[in-house]
Each structure stands twice: as structure tokens, then as C-alpha cells.
Amino acid sequence: MAANEERFQALERRAADVIETITNSGIKYGEKDEVVNVCQAIREIRMEERKIGEQDGELKKARETAGKLYEMGLDTEKIAQAVGYAVDTVKGWLGIE
Image (cartoon, rainbow, N blue to C red):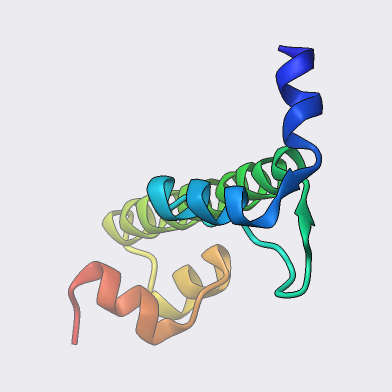
């Protein structure tokens, strides 16, 4: 495994282009880079995906909380304040107006 990582730390740009094209993985590197550290690029992709997952989870939790607070009779302005989203957004989640 370590030998493979070493090999992919200084990969020729054309090889990185092929990997990116085949996998559609979102590997990012500078246009003028002749050598690409694919390991670092993949780590960055994973971190970005983790952040997106966390944001999705936070949004889901806010929507669930808004629904529960609405069922408890709280008005939409207070719900919006509690979950940290705009009133119109909360109303959209709740299917009101």
C-alpha cells in the first residue's frame, strides 16, 4: 500500500488526466502542473465530500426539527429562528404558503 502511495505522489499529468477522465473523481490540479500528487488530491476530495455530507445532515436535522416544532404549535418565525433558516425556507419545508 505504501509503495502505491509513493508512486501516486508524483504522477505524470497525462496519467492523472486519464485517471480523472475514467473515474470522474474530481481530481483538481493546476493547469501548468506537470506532476500531480494524486494521493493529496484524493484526500482533498474526501474532505470536500465529508463537508457536503455534514451540511446535508445539518439541513436534514433542521428540517426534521422544524416539522416537530410546527407540530407542537410553534409559529414559523420562532421555528425559523430556532433552526437558523429564513422564514420563507421554513414555510417551504412545512408546505405552508
